[in-house]
Image 1 (cartoon, rainbow, N blue to C red):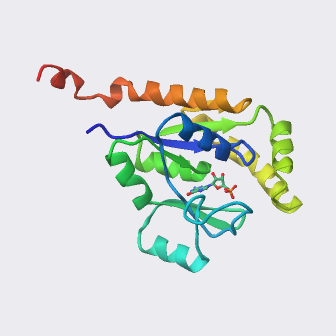
Image 2: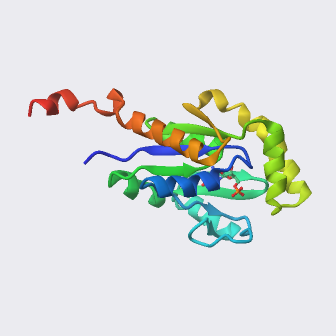
Image 3: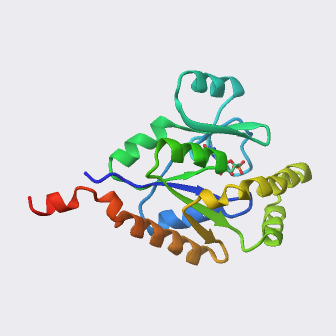
Length: 199
Ligand code: 5GP
């Protein structure tokens, strides 16, 4: 059985990762890892769907038990991916998307060098700010923190494999699908193809 791709999707706050995710799932089958976080749910978010919303203590217990594939702190909260969310899906051949920030992405790449790292960006910084404010779900302090963090996040940009600009959501999702399809055909992912061809 061919393994599924492990796709890491990062992007600064306001890049539209959540929207891209829902459009992608309408276009094709993807597994999504549900991260654990200690931040409070936003209006409209559901526990077990958007995140596993857990306490600080539970999160630290998972770290101690070696259950986290990767984790980081972001604006004072823990965010992380559990091994259990990832392994079964990829082994069963489904392509899995991890929607995580840059430091987590680097950790995933270290553990799974075959992961494909995609950076999703708004057209420019001014548009990012407009989208973030337009969301209207966060305080001014949080918005400033998220915008400020973008400078640090962009330092990791050269270590990504692909960049996709989110100008229009359907076009953006289609570009991500093209990347996924091309990566599935990469010769490096078919190391035993010549041998199997003659079987
Ligand atoms: P938000 O609070 O906007 O949902 O997420 C804040 C940031 O945390 C986003 O950049 C998001 O991609 C990232 N994030 C969400 N889940 C995880 C995770 O499991 N691990 C890491 N490293 N980052 C995450």
